[in-house]
Amino acid sequence: MLSASSTVIHSMTHTKTWQSEPYWGLGFDFDPQWHLTPAQEALQERLIELCATTLRPNAIESDRGLIYPRKNFEALAKLGLLGLLVPQEWGGMGENHTCAAMVVETIARYGCPSTAMCYVMHLGATAAALFRAADNPELQSVLQRLDRDVFIGTLSYSDPETGSHFWYPVSSRAERTQDGWAVFKKASWTTSAGFADWYIVQTSSPDFNGDYSDLSCFLIYSHEVQAEPQKWDALGLRGNQSGTLLVDGVTVPSDRMVGPKGDGASSNDEIVDPFFLLCSSCCWNGIALGAIDIAKRHTTRKKHVDVGMRVADYPTIQDYVGEAIMDTNAARSFSFSMAKLMDELTNNCDWSLHTQDPGALPRAAHLHWYWQIKFIAAKNVAHVCDKMLHACGGTGFKKDLEIERYLRDGKAGWVMGPTNEVLRQFVGKMALLGFESLDYWNQTVNQRVLHNEIKKLDADGKRQLAAQLLAEAEGTASSKIPVLQ
Ligand SMILES: Cc1cc2nc3c(=O)[nH]c(=O)nc-3n(C[C@H](O)[C@H](O)[C@H](O)COP(=O)(O)OP(=O)(O)OC[C@H]3O[C@@H](n4cnc5c(N)ncnc54)[C@H](O)[C@@H]3O)c2cc1C
Image (cartoon, helix red, strand yellow):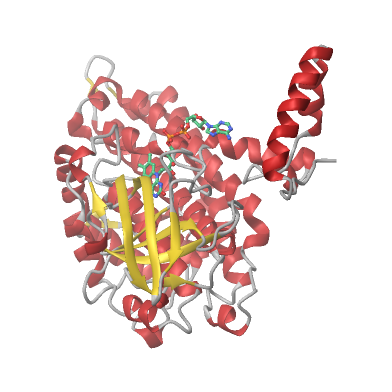
C-alpha cells in the first residue's frame, strides 16, 4: 500500500532544479502544483532559475548593505513579470490572481523576500491603476511601460498620525485647482519610497467635509515626491526601503486622480486590500518555505561522528520539519483557495468587468477572508522560521546559513498593517457584533461605553459635562452622529 502510493506520487512529480542540479530543498512533491496551469508551471521553473542565478545573490547584498533591489526588478522585467496582471492587448501577461500568488511565493522562497515585498506593492499599485484605467490614457500609458522601462510602482497609504490604521489618512488631503488637483500626502511608511517610479497615494477627497470615509487616490511620479531612504534601517526586509514619503502640494492634471472622486474606499475594499493581503500572505508563506528548504539542506548534510547520525536522522528534527511543512501547506492552501476564488469572481482577473460596471466590487464581499489568510500566514512564518533555526542549531544563528535572514524578514509579517492584532480583532468583532461594529472611521458612538462612563459621574459632574457638550453643540449643531443600537 505504502510503496504503491509513493510510486504514484513519484510519477506525478518532476525534479525541481537549481542551476541545472536537483534542488537541495523540498521538491515539487510538497508543492500544491495542481493550482497552476502548464504555462504557470513553466513560468515558475524559469523564475526559480532566475532566483538561483540572480535574485538570491542580490538578496544577500541587499540585506547586508540596505540596498534597494532594483537589479532584481530589472531581471523580473526581462521575464515580463512587472506587467503580470496587465491585459495582453496592453503588452502585459494578462495573468490571474493564482499566478500572482505563485510568483510572489516563488520570489520570496527561492530569491529575495525584500524583492518579493516590493513586488507585492508593485502588483497592488498596478491593480489599483488597472481597476480604473479604462477611460484614463495616463494610467494606460503607465501600465504599458512597466516591463519596457522597469517602471516600478508602489502604494503609499500609511499616515504618521494613525499608525497601522492606514485607511485613515488624517495628514493628507487634496484640493481642487483650476486644471486638476493639488495633492498633499504625508506617509510614514512606503515600500520602495524614493526608488519607485510611480506611486498610488491615498488622501481625503477634494471638498472633504470631515468624513474620513471620503477618500481619493492619485497617481504621482517619482520627481513629485520627497523621500528619505537614508533613514531606513530595520530588522528585516532591509532591501524593502519602506521609508517616509512627502507629496507637498504638488499640482497634477485632473486625469491623475485614479477613478472618480471619493473612489478610495471602494478601491481599498475591491483592490488594494484583496491584492495586498493575498500577495503579502504568499510572501510570508514563501519565507516559511525558504526556511524549511535551508533546514533540509543543512540537517541532511551535517553529521555527528560520535553517533554516526546526520542531524536529519534525529526524530526531533523530523518532527520539527514535518510540522512546519504541514502548517505552512495549510497556510498556502488557504491563500491559494482565496486566489482561486478571486479568479472565479472575476473571470480570471478580467479588468473589463469594471469597465462594463464601475460599481462591480466582486472581491470586496470577501474582505474578512483576506484578513484571515494574512493573519495565518504571518503567524505561521514567525513560528516556522523560529523552529527551523532551532533545527539548524548554532550554525543557523550565523549569517552564512541564511536562515537568520529569513527569520528577520518573516518578522515583518505580524507588524505590517493591517497588523495581526488588528486582524484578529476585526474577525472576532465582526463575527460577534457585525461588520458595522468595526467602525473604520470612528463615526459610530458606542452607547454602552458612553453610558457606562457617564454613570460614574456625580450630579455636578453630569452638569459640567452637559454644559460643555451644549457649548460644543452650538458650534456643531448640524453634525449628525450615527449611534450604535
Ligand atoms: C516592512 C514594512 C513595509 C511597509 N510598507 C508599507 C507600504 O508600502 N505602504 C504603506 O502604506 N505602509 C507600509 N507599511 C506600514 C504598515 O502598513 C503599518 O502602517 C506600520 O507597520 C504600522 O507601524 P506603527 O509603528 O505605526 O504601529 P502602530 O499602529 O503604532 O501599532 C503599535 C501596536 O498597536 C497595535 N494596534 C494598532 N491599532 C490597534 C487596534 N485598533 N486594535 C488593537 N491593536 C492595535 C498594533 O497591532 C501594534 O501591536 C510597512 C510596514 C513595514 C514593517
